[in-house]
Image 1 (tube, rainbow, N blue to C red):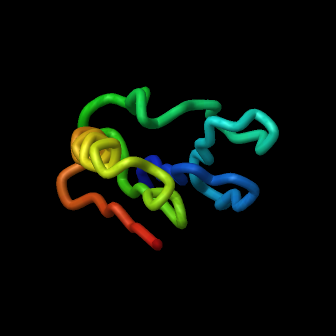
Image 2 (image 1 turned 45 degrees about the vertical axis):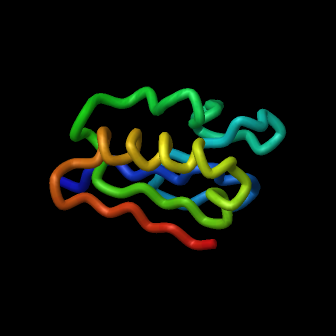
Length: 84
């Protein structure tokens, strides 16, 4: 069984098979959420996190907090894919 996958800051670029997350309701995300306030998932419950052209819009301190939060929700051996 394939695990949960997240697409952080999806904007208009939704990914099939992912929970598309954005803080802008105009993007019609699957989950309306400001991820700087945390991810609403249990520890070790996410297989993959995708962040494309997203991290560069955060303050450096916010990036470190987000990475810690992604680490918390990723299963052991999970993937955090970043494109900047």
